[in-house]
Length: 445
Ligand code: 6PG
Image (cartoon, rainbow, N blue to C red; front, side):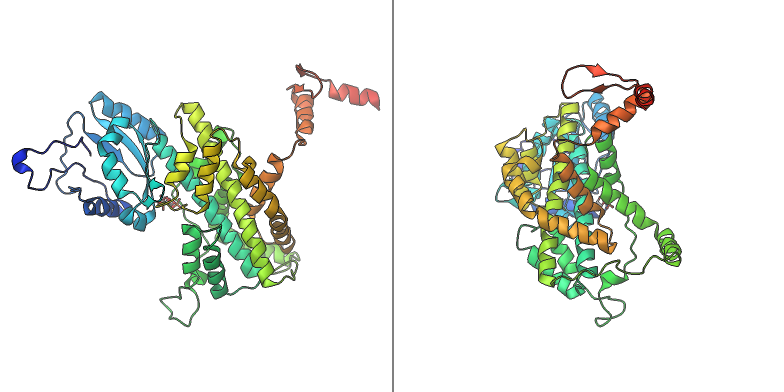
């Protein structure tokens, strides 16, 4: 609950000011966010939360909420004179405590009332605090949802890079830790790459320091809470291609079928499928590491392009007027997908807010062209070796499809017209056409 900053009575000026914000329903991140706000000098009155709200007070929902629930609640709250904000909060436990990225959307007055608190509690970058008023309605929740979809994509791509380094290059866990730590000094610098380097250095605490890395003991089944699924559903609703994010979601579903996968491996082995790599790839480790780095970077660019285009499409549909440069800015710090290259994504949208796709920003276009050879090499070798790289492959196909000025969609249109009289357009004259394909084909024989 929040309310506008009251003018302190003169007599009370020396005492602590009355609370302006209270937090309720606190799970891990909520508890830390409460501590973070309290530490910045704003009382957080968890226990003393009044069950009653006065007109002009505001409710802020900081959970991973479905955006339409927020829109419904905005209306309910408004009917009682209450303001409402749906605020995406990213950063995990540590971010909530020390500075998350905040994505508030809904009632602008509610945002204005607590802007100073949010700006202090948010992560700080050289480009300002990682908070901005995202837009009206459920815009804040929607932006957080897409953030999480991008997060799924990043995690899948990093996992694939690890798999290729380990299975093709034979890199040990400590070598992989070093590789990610090194990558974190360059264009791939990001929270997820940084924590990945750390993960590979942790020994199994239950078995002792000589027993190997804990990561090897973790069951290969990925959990999820649902925001990635919403992202893919929304991409389909809005007819925005998001194949990398979809591949990461499918990857999680397939990982969940552990028993079926084990059984499938055994059936196929009995039918003659070789165990292990289908091809031995002879490549110098350093060369492999460098190529995988380039493949990971290029794949990430495609994934972010998909997320940004989803945000743009929703913004147009809802009239939210989302500012993609500003959203990139507030993702530069605090959040799970924070990364060095978000500054460059911000600059790309500053240069051209109407940019059709990140891939065609000149800077990114140049990088993609420079890296595409290494990217293709990694995906091709993974395919030959029988290593599944759905995220990198989906990104590469996205790139190759998007840059293609003549797709085989003409044939699909012909098929649709043949069996369903769905008509087609021609390249040489306007209008829509239907052809009696079967009759003409029979006559021609
Ligand atoms: C964040 C995280 C946070 C949460 C994810 C996990 O931005 O701080 O995204 O919101 O950890 O929702 O999502 P899954 O459980 O679906 O992987």
